[in-house]
Amino acid sequence: MIRIRQLCKSYHRGGQEVRVLQDLNLRVEEGDFLALMGPSGSGKSTLLNLIAGIDRPTSGDIEINGVDISSLDDAALARWRAAHVGFVFQFYNLIPVLTAFENVELPLQLTSLDRSTRKRRVEAALASVGLSDRLHHIPGELSGGQQQRVAIARALITGPSIIVADEPTGDLDRQAASEILGMLQELNREQHKTIIMVTHDPKAAEYARAIVQLEKGQLS
Image 1 (cartoon, rainbow, N blue to C red):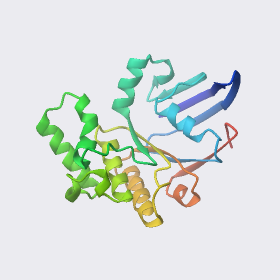
Image 2: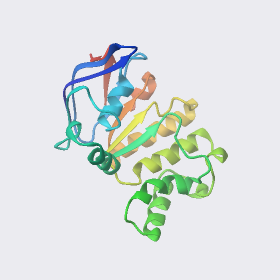
Image 3: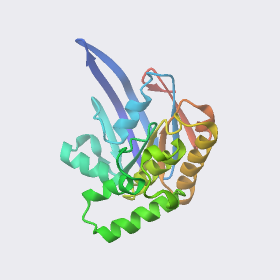
């Protein structure tokens, strides 16, 4: 499903080139649940952002379901990302003045779906993460674990084939983290979602099907 070949990513800081990823090769099959681990600064989040189409490589190829996303122009990449990738972040990235329903509905506002169809989908998504009774609560009225559930529902609302999760349990206590990881594992097993998760926590990584270590921009 995901084929990465000779991937390099560099940034320029203060006139100097900083190499983050170097000649990286990776293959992720459809339905995998992959944990990316490594020390701070190893390039984990950079790799995740490249796979998700948030960032572009300096060189190399990223092919996903037969599409070389590294060759797409900005508009085409944005359309691809909206259709195929769901995002789960450490700090939820919910809009604080919007309710859970409105936060989950937001990606559907960019589609041609009518209001009643959007309503059914949002209610179903929030029900799937156990939040049918929290539709009209704003993030400040929800616990951290509940906010992350809203974020997962939002990630699923467009039916993406890939879910990218960047330290999804980093801001949660152990019980809430276990619930969120179990939910991701269930999505992988029952809905066959391909999940790529960055984590520094070995216990979180145990929920994945495979673990890849990244150090100094290279896989080991």
